[in-house]
Image (cartoon, rainbow, N blue to C red; front, top):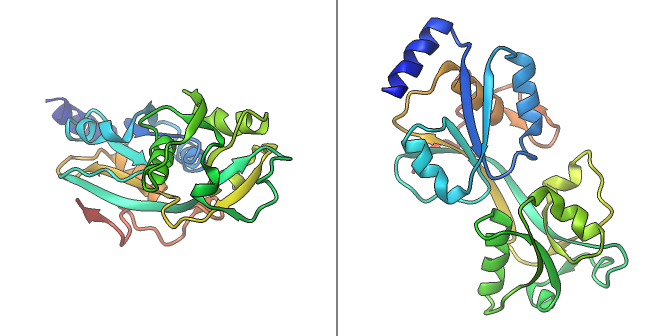
Length: 237
């Protein structure tokens, strides 16, 4: 019934409405979100922080329209578009013994103090997975609720931690070194999801177009996006 009311309201308002977007992190999405609000100032945007493992349930229940995850969601009934395949490196304080290295192996990181997010966040899952593959356990000395603070805490000298390459292009400069990790699995894949059988409002379709047509290298929209925002990489899971 809620979905039906939203569809009727969307038809009446001719696109002026609300879009509900959930993500594990909104730092990656600040560019397309700003572009969306500039282009559609009358549309209300509701942002919800959400763990990837909770997204499928909320999408199928139509409690959110779109979700952006930095790790795969293994669930039926979802459609996905890959947005960004990003290398994840090791950030260290300046002056750290590893700071001058061009790359480092997981084995060399055993025993190092880590600053990380809480369990469930993509950085923590990636860290635990990389170490577990080698029968190791990371030494976590600082577990934070604010993932955006991880780089700052590393720069303050509290430890080392995983930081995506995308963050190096951020306008916020952090006093820390970034070292490549010698493992092909040390990456994150940022993906946009929505329920395959859901009716997306005009506001949600416009948001999907903005996000899928965003150029993550130049930080501006691509010129060849189609009207629906579904690029050739779209697949149904």
